[in-house]
Length: 325
Image 1 (cartoon, rainbow, N blue to C red):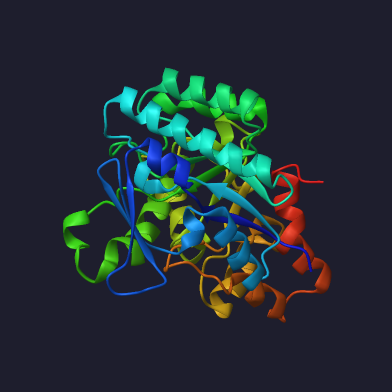
Image 2 (cartoon, rainbow, N blue to C red):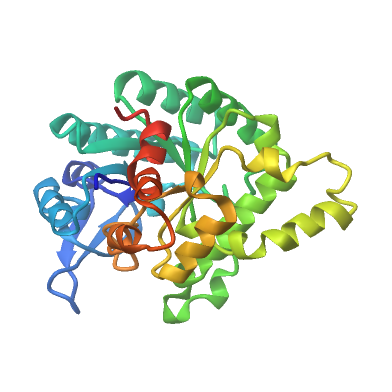
């Protein structure tokens, strides 16, 4: 059954070189690498993160047909000077475009944009759309601590809606970082808290109703949102901060999608039951070692949905979002 992986990352060797970075084998694992670039450490990843040939081999191993490639959250650079974040975004977008041109039927692009400067973000978005054949845009869950309901982001949402480009939202710079340093908790659970906060702030801020044609994908299964959507709905009814805003949950959810990076069949089944198979898209978080590389197989083996529903989840939902024929 054909599939599309909407959640994957890449930083091609050409971009690493242009940014003055280095690639080294991990000291603890001979099959994983550590990248030092733009003042960031990116680990632990396989060679497919930066080498296209290695990536093709790995995708064949995991039976992944098509990937939407996003830059890595490490290089959003939202807290840097805007000229730096704009430069880093431009380098990544152009490097991913070269990957797309080499294998256009296998790799499509989510561009990154410098969200800490609205004007520069729109400029990079328009350039990437016109020159680099992007299929969507990836942004973080916060911009230097500002949530996604911040009004400086409104022109970006409007432009995405105008261009009909899906928005892929990925956790970055997790809150409470000082409490998450041990046990890799910043990634294990910090990402889930970030996604939950990003969705809730956008919902309560009326973003999904203000921009009704904006299509949004939340990764890692939506964090705690599917399990706690009842609590969020309750707040809309009783809390004075939001109850009189006229926010309608059903209207807000109509263009929201959730990926399948959940690692667990029962969790996946719950996500599908809660939001409907037409709102779930396959994802792996390849090639990080916290990725769910068995996600495609898990969907194929799921016995609570029909073969036609599996086609929706594995391919058709994402194909419609990203305009893949």
